[in-house]
Image (cartoon, rainbow, N blue to C red; front, top):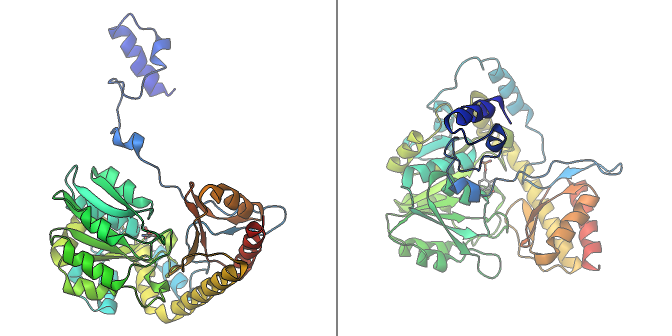
Length: 388
Ligand SMILES: *Cc1c(COP(=O)(O)O)cnc(C)c1O
């Protein structure tokens, strides 16, 4: 018990003399005598970070649980971040001018259509706050990115999760059918985290034709750089053609800047302006801004790494198929094992040999494509697990 609570308790004793201090030590969570967070938070899942790599039995451990880029920062990006560190006594540029202009140029869109935030999770929070009154609905697939229910609950919006279709894919017709007059936002995660599947361009066109133009359709493309499947949508082209489309992207995955927290939206001007209003002031810090600009300039170098990760994904998938696994092809930097009740056993088998992976209850296990040594070790676990 804190001193603060004790004092409050003591005051309670004076006012309501039937109570003793001992009674006060056991206040219920909704006791009107203490600050009481919103009830929705009790029901809300907390965001679970991936487990850190912890060395086991002399084996190097690998973190394959957070879809991070295993490569260290590019020397050119690191140099810019180090230089920017010399100015951290100052606030960052609140308008995020240089990064916004660099993004606008590389995406060939007007700067007024870009809005930045503290990771694309931060931007998504801005979206829900900008679009939803209490109780307004946000439609998304499930299972999908675990931040979706959290940002909705925090903003007081109602989550409308729509189960995935067979094949671990978004059920876009069912998502369109889930739209009501309360729906303000519909999120399409492609490739989907954690299942790795893409929506097809034609399915997404059909969805856009079916939903009212008042629904903001957010295309979450956190992994777009890893896509090799041609059936997927060209989100930027859809954005150009549809006033109600917004594209959400991040520097955390392909760009390898997860630790700096910077993501962005490409939205039409009215929505983009609303996202700037709901942003945390000065949220995108000066190191993140500088690193984002430097990373856009160095994308040719980063792309070499992205291609190497895609090649590793293809190698792992081919080997898994040889082992007899029948998995949906992944378009991201991770592989999804829909193991149902065997998920815990599989995650434990990985962790026993120092591979930290991400288990989602009894749905499955997601494993991030990492260093070749880590991927090799994963393949030895999957081989043993198949025949167990
Ligand atoms: C990782 C991820 C993000 C990006 O998160 P940041 O906040 O930008 O680090 C966004 N959407 C999905 C689906 C993700 O998996």
